[in-house]
Amino acid sequence: MAYHSTGFDTALAIAAGDDPSLLAELRSAFARSCAHQLDLMRRARCDGNWEVAASRLHAIASSFHADELMELANEACKAVPGEPGILRRIDSFVAGLD
Image 1 (cartoon, rainbow, N blue to C red):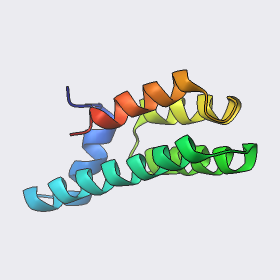
Image 2: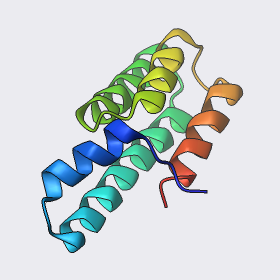
Image 3: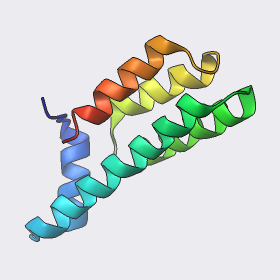
């Protein structure tokens, strides 16, 4: 199931213009960036590392108007490191980007 949001799709379309290969590249880069921050969150062993990764994830989401991911990142910032529920929800979001 692919993730679709009007704001996210619009931001990608504006950035890519009429270039479908650039659109695909931007979507892929966004997915990789999100997956990288999720990996850092999974490996975080202290509040600081967890909060930095969650904040970066929020920034990535914000730059592409991915509102659902921004909300998940906000929840993560308030959660304890390694909170399995939020990790599963972010993982589900990232998997839906493909």
